[in-house]
Amino acid sequence: MNIITIERKVLERNDEIADQNRALLRQHGILAFNLVSSPGAGKTSIVERTLEHLGQDVRVGVIEGDVQTDFDAQRVARYRVPVIQIVTNGGCHLEARLVQDALAQMDLRGLHMLIIENVGNLVCPANYDLGEAMKVVVLSTTEGDDKPLKYPGMVRNASVLLINKIDLIPYIPCDLAALRKNALQINPHLQIFETSCTTNAGIAEWCRWLKEKGVHRP
Amino acid sequence: MHELSIAQGIVDIIRQYVPADQTADVRQVKVRVGHMAGIVPDSLDFCFGAIVDGTPLGDARLDIEETPVRSQCAGCSEVFVVEGSVFRCPSCGSPEIRIISGTELQVIEIQLSDRQAGAI
Image 1: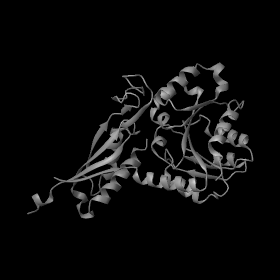
Image 2: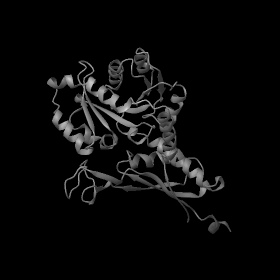
Image 3: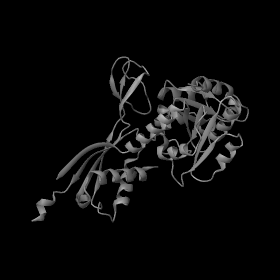
Image 4: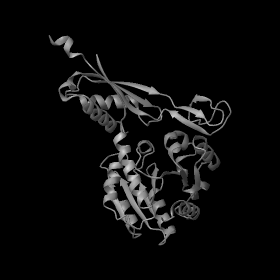
């Protein structure tokens, strides 16, 4: 047997492009976050409430990732922000190359922030660096308080957890304290906000934190 | 869920390292998959087989080495394996731990049959 020893990361190319994306975003002073969740947890609604709340003084660009349709980009475009839709045609996650192509289509000058809404999936997106500064994971109360334990990879890699649909708590068996405890058990450094896109609960706190984190123009 | 694209990534790496006229000699490809790499080994194996079937790489098989999630405590330096989503030091109870391994997804080595042996 002839053996070729290589030890190469399978996702090496993705990581290289992600680093290029990160460098480009840093050069423009843009805070980028990768918004991930299961399908239907409320990512697009979070984007909408965030854009509403940040208002005109924070300029945000949005990249929307979906398996099919540009419905989400249409929703976001109503807020008069630059938005690029990526349709993955069945792909279960965004890859750095797709984001690189999207960034090439967006005028980055003057932007403070970039929201990359990933495809709804808590498994695969955890392993694909897009060049973001941080991952923001949305878990909705209807998914159950044990959800963090089922997706440790994603929770461990995230910087922020948004517990969404908090307004439904009176109607469902979801123990918020247990959800928090389960999430912090996997990642003690998680910044946690409880939000509702229906009542706007928690949106102001989340946006305040985001502004402090992101809007410092060079 | 994305094992098919990972399998394609492995095929791309093989093609980079093995000259085109030797791809038919590839027998085994050793891959290291961490338990937190988000990959189902059986699924990766199946996808790889489906991709190489009927190609010059048709005789290549994956040898998947699974690695546990090993961590080191930032407080007491204990090294341990994370089991069942409990990311806490079993020795001192601290949640401040650093993951050492278990997230990797790597092609380690490629084995080719020794053509010269059967050539003459």
